Amino acid sequence: KVLILDFGGQYNQLIARRVREQQVYCEIKPYNISLEEIENFNPSAIILSGGPSSVYKEDAPKCTREVFSGKWPVLGICYGMQLMVQELGGEVKRANHREYGTISMNILDHGGLFQGLGEKTEVLMSHSDYVSIAPTNFIVTANSENTPVAAIENHKEKLYGIQFHPEVIHTVEGKEIIGNFLFNICGLSKDWTMESFIERTVEDIKKQIGDKKAVCGLSGGVDSAVAALLVHRAIGDNLTCIFVDHGLLRKNEAEEVMEAFEGKLGLKVVKIDAKDEFLSKLKGITDPEQKRKIIGNEFVRIFEREAVKYGNGEFLVQGTLYPDVVESGTDTATTIKTHHNVGGLPEDMKFELCEPLRNLFKDEVREVGLKLGLPEHLVWRQPFPGPGLGIRIMGEVTEEKLEILRNADAIVREEIINYDKERKVWQFFAVLPGTYSVGVMGDDRTYSQVVAVRAVGSEDGMTATWSRLPYELLDKISKRIVNEVDGVNRVVYDITSKPPGTIEWE
Ligand code: XMP
Image (tube, rainbow, N blue to C red; front, top):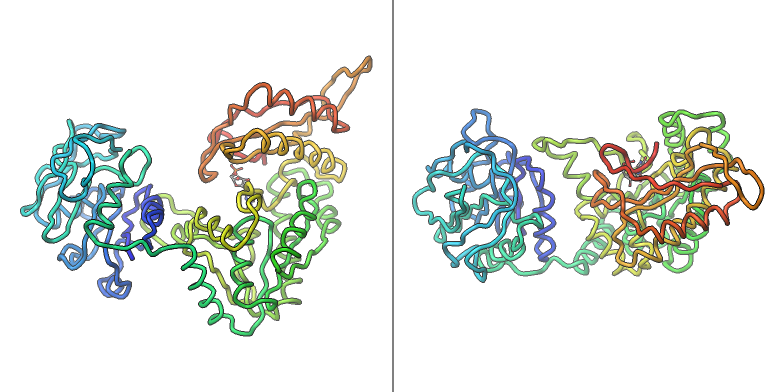
């Protein structure tokens, strides 16, 4: 397995994903873990990430020098390379111009990282410092117009450094370069497969939970579903899944979730019908933040009450993923966020946590889901916010508005799923802005609700671009909504990206 030391670069999780994609297990740890911790982890190779600092600054983050002792093969990326250079007696300087973008790099040596590549390759550079002198015993294996030392290699000690970012897609042969390091240089084998993950994890869960009871909050989303399936494999019917229907779900969603999970996948699921509780708490509330708070609190209250009934207060299964673990666990990244698990369950809940997915990325979770028999449409389900339709209805939430939104949303989803076979559109739904407009239908004047259609492309929801859907598709959606949904006479399309907008309207 590979250890990735995190110096705070923005692409660090991508490095881990690129390594995992090549079926090699890796974990990200803070740069300053001790030598002992590294030895305990027992890596076959170490990758040093990029980062925002300058190695010649006084408080520059540094890992233990033993990393460069030749004990492990090391690949330093960007800041990681510069640190290696500085620690081994080379020279790093501030560049006159910050270099950012894809450039054509010249490969000078094909004996190490660049085996099988041509004379030139496109790479992404993003740095304000550069290596001016490589340490002794290193050869310079690549350069470019502005970067005299773009890659260095010391085959004897197995130390490698690259100025560019092989983990991003803009570096066209990034996969090959990382692959050369993992397989040709370090001699690692491809043994990280989802089959082996499932086998190991099921054993671990058996050990952790034994013959005690566990509960899992099922949302219908892929994470909680896969976590539940894994735990179910380990402890069978001692797991109870709790699905809270807060009445803010999409059309037929509660029925579909129950149907998908109850019979076919063997899970024991109890549905808690809490529609009336939620709606009465939301009565008269128009402020978005207040709505979110009420829905969140109510969810926790109901879940706590029910979980204790079924779980004996023993284990709580959660679908926490690796990105959440990494982001709350390192103090280096400039993008630190505190993550709240879905539903925001309280920390003082008297359960021990079981989080079988805490080492997985989303794409790995999907693969595990498929292997465990989760149907494709659930594996690829688009994200749906915890507060549900409650934050897609502007103003007060009422049963009448919910009905209109559910029907309009069902049309939007049906048409876009039909059109978008390759799943290019990341999330798509209808919104009820709470605006009324005048229209004409037949010979009559109408005065009814406006429906907004939202469709965006995104990787992770942090940024998003509004989808350029074909006019014909938008036309069909618009006609269907106005014809089929009572109470709507106008449809608009949201052409705001994120930023400056958010994906949801509230
Ligand atoms: P925004 O609106 O912040 O949404 O651009 C980004 C992504 O997060 C989803 N979202 C939520 N998911 N609980 C969730 O589990 C929430 O309270 C919540 N609010 C927004 C949203 O659907 C989008 O995918």
